[in-house]
Image (cartoon, rainbow, N blue to C red):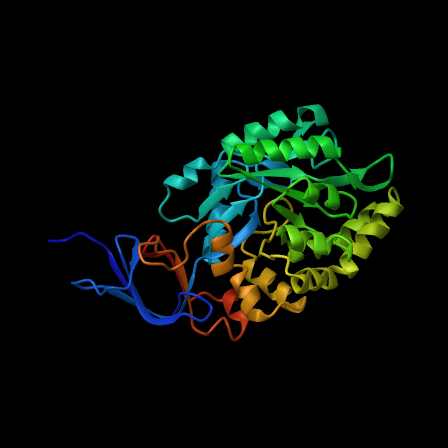
Amino acid sequence: MSDRVVLHVKGRVLVGPEDVRDELWAVDGRITYSRPSGDALTVTGWALPGLVDAHCHVGLDRHGPVDEATSEKQALTDRDAGTLLIRDAGSPSDTRWIDEREDLPKIIRAGRHIARTRRYIRNYAHEIEPSELVAYVGQEARRSDGWVKLVGDWIDREAGDLTACWPRAEVEAAIAEAHRLGARVTAHCFAEDSLRDLVEAGIDCVEHATGLTEETIPLFAERGVAIVPTLVNIATFPRLADGGEEKFPRWSAHMRRLYERRYDTVRAAYDAGVPVFVGTDAGGSLAHGLVAAEVEELVKAGIPPLDALSATAWGARAWLGRPSLEEGAPADLVVYDEDPRADVRALAAPRRVIVNGRVIG
């Protein structure tokens, strides 16, 4: 008697934005479009590849690293929301044990944040000086899954506002070292000042990117530098600004300006051809499981629904070098009652979540 696990998904399988098939099977955790023999459990509905959260922090809360039980709860929350591939954009916790779990999302790690001394959230990052940047980037490139995360700007208490963290020469050398080791580099950036140096130094992606302007957007487009806007996180800027008003009024006013133009910034980047991907910044101060809300935010910013959907599905997976619903790919998919291409709000109500060919929820 065979002990293989066979799942039959039928209805409308969204292999790509316009590639819609009637059915697929998962045999022992892998996708096939060839009908296998024997019985199968059948699931019906609109099927998408497991969603991508390209800016997420498993193993981190507002105070720093968390224990395994808390990390597991975070990963389960993301999974149940349909997020089955996470680019963990910086975490001080060792979450490699998650790779052994067949029921949890797959994680692409960027190592631990690399920040300037006393220029980031306490207990999150390696806090170093510019002379150490190349060495630490090399260290995190070797430890990670092909990404390194820099903190590109943060509040400078002497200036009373956001300023760039790294000199241009050190950034160029550090990014070159990461690329030599086969890793891509991304950076947290709220403000305007650090963007040109980072892009001209060869960075691959910028997180948040609220400081994009009509001068820097063409540079991003020309170099193919992606952005992950994390609009559900940018929504917290007014509250942060209120909290810092008395001590740092320049910073507070700056944060409000960045917030007020957030949608225009993202739409201008998209219109210029800058690649845009979905990320929530879950962990830290934000809850996990917000991927559907972030897709809705991209649509509010003016990105066409199908492209916003691709930014968490087919396009995001291709950008991260992971398969979608191809023959032989891991059977990680989410099934909905309605067509999410017609209304992205359908993403908020997954009917079934399937991880490695097994129905989880």
